[in-house]
Structure formats: structure tokens, C-alpha cells
Amino acid sequence: MAAANNESQGLKIAVAAFVTLTVILAVTSYFLYSSYSRTEGLLQSATEKASKSDRAASEALNQYQKFRELVGARGEEFDTAKGEVETHFKKVNSRLVGIASSINAALTKAQGAGAQGAELEEAKQKIQQLVASYGNEPNKNYISSMDRLLELLESTALVDSELAVNYLALRQSLESSTSVAKSQIDVEAKAASDSKTDLEAEHSKHEQERNVLLAKVDQLTTDLDQAKTEMANVNTQNRQQTDELNRNIELLTARIREYRAALDREETVLDRPDGHITYVDFGRNEVQVDVNRRQGARPQMKMTIFDSQSAGVPTDRPKGTIELIQVGEKNSIARILKMNSPIEPFRIGDIVYSVAWSPDEPMRYALIGKIDMNRDGVDDRNDLRMMIENAGGTVDYDLPPPGAGRESGELTPKIDWYVVDDREPLRDLYKKDTEATISATMSFTKHKGEMIREARNNGSRPIDIGRLLSYLGYDMNAPMVGKAEAINEKAMERLTRPKPKTDAEKAADAAKLKDTEFENMPDPR
Image 1 (tube, rainbow, N blue to C red):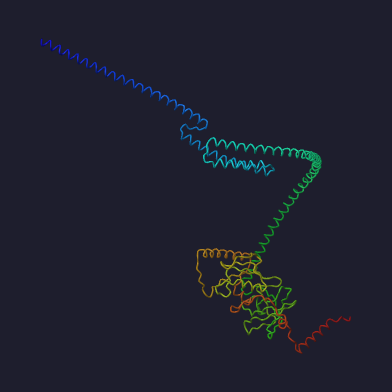
Image 2 (cartoon, helix red, strand yellow):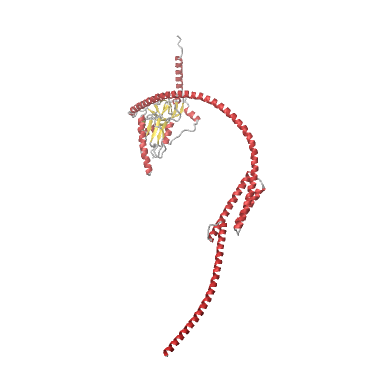
């Protein structure tokens, strides 16, 4: 019984649990179905909204693509397309400015060429205004830009039409001018044809003359070849004569060297007298010499006096120096400058000698190296040159040391004497030597030796500068006197007036004249 009760009790509990679970399941199923229905409604609503949004987005994208294609932008993204549009706007602005400048230049050129019409000036101003307004427009967009461009295009079309009208008028004017020019061209063409005919006739004439000239040229060429042959023969003969002349010159130069060398062996007999003293007046301190104007003597020439018994001229012991003050046709008057010894006065017959002058030809000198006349260490070549020229000589060649001038003249066999001063100065002069001065001195010393050797080879004779200065009447303590710039003629006449003769001299002259007349009487036979 107990077991049966327990089984029925368990059954009841199981049935009760089953019913409870069934109820719970039914409630749960209800609520789940109700929630599913609501959720399904929401899902359907959301799906419809999403579908509408997709359609709207797709339509907007299609519209954006169409707008981008319409605008011409290549970028798909908004910012890229926007930047591309802005860049294009800037490019359009710059091109519009260039187009406006070109149009203005073309219009100005056309107006300068003669294009007329107020419409051209109005179109020009309107184009400038359109470009300015396009560039200054604050809210620029596609439609406004197209409007401005269309207005600009209309203005440009107006300009083109006005230019076409002007071009048509110009063309008509040119056609009329062309017709006139054509008639003139026809006249000129006829004249050109006539000129061509005349030219051909002249050409034929010139061709004939050319053939004649060619024949003459051939003849002249033959004559020229013959002349060249003769000239070559003459040149050969001239060259032979030149060689023979050079050989003769060398032979004569060698003979001159031999003669001068023979004269150099006698130290005191080196030259021949240039004249003699014919009268001495110690009261007037004057002498008369037998040198004259025809021989080339001139006033202020200084000469040296030697004893009449001298073995040769010049000797080492001159008696003194004179200076010509008046030169005549037969004789000359000279002033006594210096007598070396009072016990050996000037006498009639004493020898007159000039170291720088000889009758009919001056003596030629070459100055080689330093010339220190007073031995003070300063070059005095200009003073020596002046003394030689005053004495009637010439300086044909001059080779000064560095710092004293430039080399001048030419060393030739015609030079009689060359002067070299090897004396040491009486006092030393300090000079700072540098590499340049040492090099210049060495070069000068070498060149000086070459010139002395060449002078010797030419036959020129050396002369000691001390002897030359004594012959020129140089005194170391006497001032140098230059050439006279003016002459006191009255004083010169008074100095050169003949001395009054005594009664005995007059009687002697009268007797001499009488004897001469008796000798010149004709023979009575």
C-alpha cells in the first residue's frame, strides 16, 4: 500500500511538473513569438530605410559623376576635383590676361596700319573691362565664368568683324593700287627687255674687246717673262758686283787698318797740319791763320798750336790754344785762348791743328763708355760732344753707360777716332748695387768690349781723352761756354781791324808795289 501510494504521489508530482513546464513553455513561446514578430517588423523597416539610403546614395553618386563629367574634372575625390577646378580657374585667368594683351596689341598695330572705326576702340575697351571684371569677381562660379567668356567671345567676334571690314577695304585699295602698279610694271618690263637687248649687244661688244685685251695680256705676259729673265740676269750681275764691292770694301778697310796701325806705331806723329800761323799780334792777343771759309772753317772753332819744327802733328807738347773769331775767304782771325809756356810764344809758321776738323771734311768720333772730363764721377759726354762740334767735328756713334742715356748712331769705318775714358774719378761716389744694376753693368761691359773690338777692326784709332781735351783747349777749372746766340758786330769789327802801319812799313809797301808794276810792264821788243 505504501509503495502504491508513493508511486501515485510521484506520478502526481510528475504530472504537476509537466503541466508547469508546459505552461512555462507556452508562455515563453508566446513571448518569443511576440518579440520575433516585433523584431521582424523592425528589420523590415530598417531594410526598407537602408534600401532607400542606398538608392539615394547611388543617385547622388551618379549625379556627382555626371556633374564632374560636365565640369571636366578628372579627380574622383571631392577635394581633388575641387583643387583641379580652382587650378583651371587660375589658368583661365592668366590666359585671359594674355589674350587681352594680344588683342590690344593686334588692335593697336591694326590702327597704326590704318584700320579705322569707333567700334574697334569700343570693342578694345569692352575686352579690357570684361577681363578686369572676370579677374575681380568675388563669387566666381562656372555659370558666371561662362557668361564672362561668352561676352568676351562676342567682343572678340566684333573685333574680328571690324577687322574683316577694314581688311576688305584695304584689299580693295590694294587691288586698285596693284592695277596701277601692274601697268607700271608692264612699262618697266618693256624697259627691262630693251635694256636686256642693249646689255646683250654690249656684252657681245665687251667680249670682243676682252678677246683683244686677252691677246694683249698674252703679249704682255711674254714681255714680262722676258723682263723677268733680264731682271734675273741683272740681279745676278748686281749680286756679283755687290760681292766684288764688299770684297773691295773689306780690302780697303784692311788697308785703312794697316795704314792707321802704321801711324799708331809713332805715338807723337798721328796726323797732318790743318794750317799755319801767318801773323801774330800779341798786343791784340790775336793771330792770323791760313784756314778759310771754303775749307769749312767757322767762328768759335778751337784749334791747337804746335811748334813749326815739330816732327809731326799732334805731339804731346802743344804750345797753346786759339779760337776763330772771324773767318774770311783766304785767312781767318783767331783769339789766343791759352799759351802753355811764356818762353815758347806763338810764331809765324807755327802749325795749326784741330783734333775735330780737317780741311773740307770733319773728323768723326765715337764715344764708348763713360766720359768723365773733370773726374768728379758724373758723366760729361754732352759737354764733350758740344766741344767736338764747336771745333768742327761730329760724333757719329755714342755708347753711354747705364743711366746716362741710350745708344745712338752707327759704328762704321768712316769714324776716325774712338774715345774711351778709363781714368778713375778723383773722389769715390757711393752707389747701392742691386741685382738689376749689376746685371745691366755686366751686359754693358760685354757690349762695350764688342764695340771697341769692332772699332779696331774698322780701322778707327783710339785717342786718349786727356790728349783730346788738351787739343780742344779744355781746362778743368774753366767754365764750359756754349754756342753764341748773338754777336756784337761793332766789337768784332774793332777787334779784327788791321793794325795801323808805320811810315817804314808804308814805304816798304810802296816800294814793293813799284817793283811789281815794273815786272808787269810789257817787253818793248
